[in-house]
Image (tube, rainbow, N blue to C red; front, side):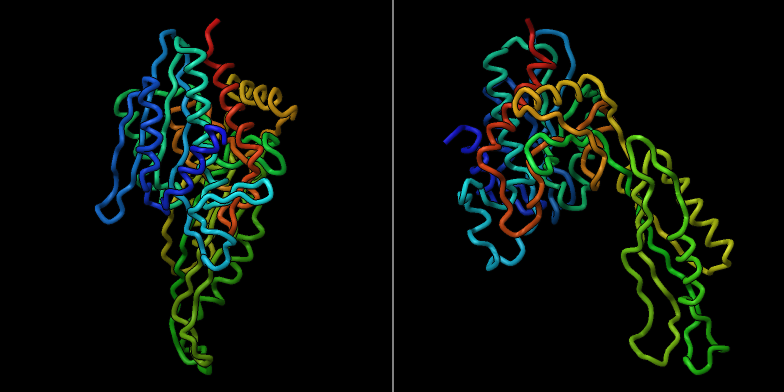
Length: 383
């Protein structure tokens, strides 16, 4: 068993369902401290929802960039245990695959990062720049007290990062075929349209909010919010929930509630999207209330030293010419981008993340570790 596989199994065996860390960060800190890392194990959030965060840094003996690995130790709930072929917290091997909750998202990445650093520091004890780790147990949860708190702490200290790899599972078919060099922003809204409840046989005595809402929704769905650009697809508007009615078939509802979401490109802003929606509501004369939740602005890392180093490491290890992409959902990269000009995501194949029988190809684990190590060599090695 390789060192990376052994650590990946040890992490998977810890039942760190969000926001629990279950000792994962302490285990990682134990591996980093002998390498010269200063490790801070931090707690954030209310007493009934404590989040574990780790900030660790090793400063080299030569000037150079500060490079960080980032990720999360928490995992999503297992779902029905009876549907798993093996205990999700007992790492299990079948047909060349490692099974367990977090195997793909993202405990294998964490193990690969740690062992890559161990190998790199052993070969380059006087490396340039600095190496850091930013880990949280609140990525799969609300995200209020995780990486965002670490970023705020570093901002208070005046600490900046130059480059960061988030270990999210980004590969599609084979390890190394895709890097995420940006993500769309996410803006959610809840619209409450207020009508007048009444008997369905006496519509003149009521005001149906669904009837008033229908042309508004049709127009919202038809709007071209932007055309995207070379890095991002056009901004998308989607309705996720629509609620109205009392359950009775003879009652005109008194209100209708719509939940919706924008996934937006760098061609739009959250404030601009809000204003366009509000202008539309006002033009239609609705009586309404609306609340907004911005979970992240878009970020983009253009081709530069980090993308070049990671793509080169992938080419050397796998022979693949990787693809840069901004597709998919949000990640903690949206927070890290506030203090780091180059943020990318890279990790194993993502086909089974959050699923029953989550797994990774066992043979890919050493390759992932080698790619991380080769990236460090390209960025921080000294002659």
